[in-house]
View 1: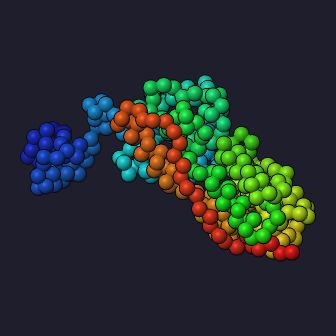
View 2: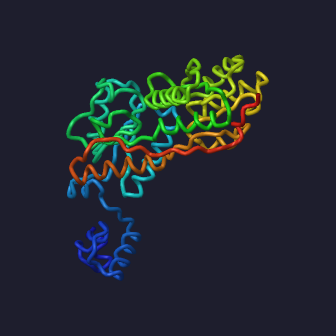
Length: 328
């Protein structure tokens, strides 16, 4: 800093004000200082600055799975939004969802000097009190059913599922089969419950639930089974990747989509418009979920904690060519 000050012909205090973005420096002086920084290759010492300010400008993210498209896209949105607010992100995947692993993750993030934590927790842990988060840490949780205990941001899973089922019923299908996600998933349960409730409210028969694991391979295996169901004319698939496998299985078994069976997915991944046929699906706004997670945890930091509760991000139906009118 002294070298920069000498080259720019200013005080070290002025260099400090420029490097920290503080006001009170004329534009000409700021340009002189920045030019001297570039010439000398000067970089502010972020660790020393953090000690002075009492903050590290870093958010920790704990996630229990990087294998699902939803978690990956949520993580991407969190990182993008954090950067827009001037924060970096430290990612810590947790392999086994236990209390010891969660405590260990928070301890490691403390050693890595983060200001607050966002937890992407798709599986049922917080709502079942199987795992609790350490007190005294500002936390926002994505994709969980723990709004009474923590601040939660989530997609409107139930609303999206209802729209999917109603879309198929409005096309004249007598009922809708459901290819659900894994049993331990909060999102999968919410979608399955809404599927069942919507059929019952419409006075329709509820077919047996078919279970997958979010992967295209599990969708393919389920599709081989559903292709042999003579009464199956419409399938609500809990994510687009399983829908991809389902479409392949139906094609191999000679069941035309949508002439014989209509298929709707959930997520609206970028590739879904390129499926054959292009997939009707429920759009999730992952970018908005990520933004709200970051804004929520920053608000908790500024206010030293905020009220708990759940913020739901709306979904929307995206109509493409994989759904059609029931042919009698």
